[in-house]
Image (cartoon, rainbow, N blue to C red; front, side, top):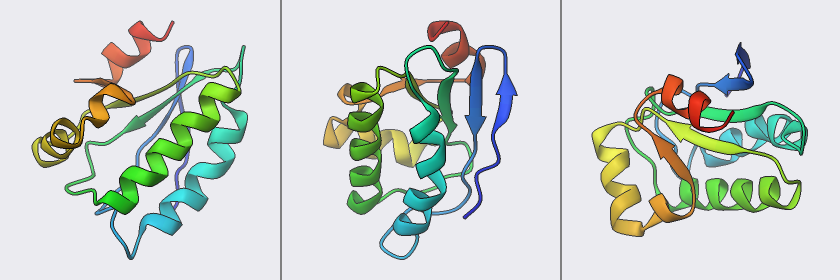
Length: 114
């Protein structure tokens, strides 16, 4: 999986594509790793655009939980945007919407993280 960052004002946007499950979670984690390392205090916020993610399993949620912890320790800013209905439901059921900031659009996320 490749996550090419796209500058968007005071943030960097990455947009993974496809399911994040047992077979792809490690590739997602590895692709996200350099962006998380750069997501520190004073650096641009990192926004993950989930519009291309139709499904996420518990393994994918674990990757996001660890990402959230890492960014918090580094005093960076991380958010998710454009969750598909199925992913939004998984987040609500698992209460992951309390772990990570989620927004309906990339623009809303950028505005909130200024």
